[in-house]
Amino acid sequence: MSELSKQAGLLSIADFLRFVIKTLIGMALARLLLPADLGTYRQIHLIYATLSGILLLGFPQGMMYFLPKAKDEEQIRRIISRTMDVVTLLALACALVMLGARYFIADNFQNPSLIPLLGIFSIYPLLLFYGSLYNFSMLGLKEPGKAAVFALFSIISDLIIILAVAFLMHSLEAIIWASLASAVLQWLWAFIGLRKKSNPISLSNYEGFKEQVSYTIPLGISFIVGILCVQLDKIMISGFFLPEEFAVFSLGAMELPLIGVLINSVNAILLPNLNPEDHDQSAAIFRSSVRKNSLLIMPLAVVFYLFASELMLFFYGKTYIDAAIYFRIYLFILPLRTATHALIFQAYGRTKLVMLDSLIMLGANAVLNYILIRQIGMKGAAIATVIVSWLMVIIYLAQMKHYLKIKVNRFFPWLKMLFSLAVAILPALIIMPLLKLIAIPFLRMIVFGSLYMMIYFLIARALKLIRSDDISMALELLRSLVGFSRNRGVPQMDKERGI
Image (cartoon, rainbow, N blue to C red; front, side):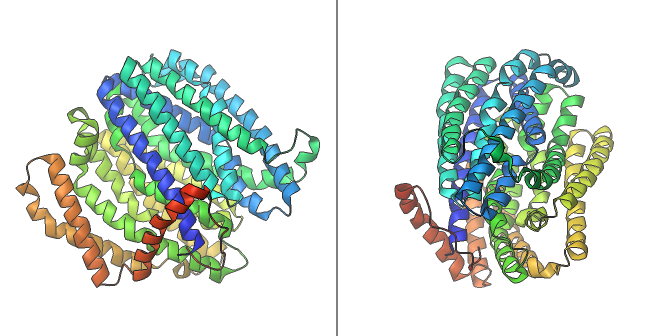
């Protein structure tokens, strides 16, 4: 197994555990809080996710571009030092915006409960922005082991503190304070780790800052627009519907978190290793990642579509079973997630093009969301997001061919992707007539979900869709976790081998 695959796998496992912990917290809160309080809690995190995505301006993500290109240790320290200064100012700006705009937000979300809670939660960006910078800095330095350990620490901290307070007090305000307590611990870890790799405050740290800004700002604007595109449906639903209705929508209106875990981890490893000067190497790495992603994404999309109702019932209870319809709609985005198309533009330094595409996507998403929400209600928001996501992929592919002079089929194995989808659908057709044999929803999901995956694996192996090296990679990754837990790190990347 290549070192790129191993590192992406370690990050995926850390992020998977993050997903598990967040799911456990979500399950607990869905049962401990009233629907209106749960809706308020999720609106607070929606507001933070939106504002942080806007005000961070892409500076943490830019570390994955600049740190691998640093000439020496001193340049690395200067890059980290000045970015820490910038992120501190951006965190303060986010806190002030959240504090100052809380009355406006509460009024537009038809939720007065947000006013005092946003006042408390405005401390959160001052603590958590450093965590984002630490994570991307470690990835840029090709030390994903440290990023993974920090992720594990963060989720364990959230699990212990937030759940303990939730079970003991059943109070939304107390849960907000618990979130801040966990964030303090994460800030300490990130601050100490970054300080070890930075210089004291000095104007000399800003040598080369102009180049960093010229790359990061367009990228940051594209991230801003991307965040707005992702959150737009939820923001508009909050404006049109009550908090308890938003709670149902927000639980279902999401892409499968497991896929986000995988793709984010793979992208974190891919970006520093895509070389604009070597199309052959970049294409080989990217194609290989797309093929491997397809092996997991396609069957998961199908099996979760089959058992969406059972899943919502198990995780959140009968109160939120209507969230399944929104979840099913969002699953139609999953085939697009076998690859992150904008990643190639980032690696090739064409961040202004990513920014332009993001603006197009935001405009189209806003118009279509408004029209469909007015016509068919909350379902319209989910449908609009799916339609725009597919249209944007078509635009990205056309631009790759025109602007980057890339033969798209060198990066995307279309036939293998379609073949993966067909193989994933086949087991569903086999088990669908049998689903009514088990009346208990959870048992039905476990039995037939397991049967689906077994049939899929057998068919995929028989058709050589899953290769022996794929199985070896998975087994080696599991074995490597023992060594990872001992060493808390991984070997350096071998750029000659693909993911």
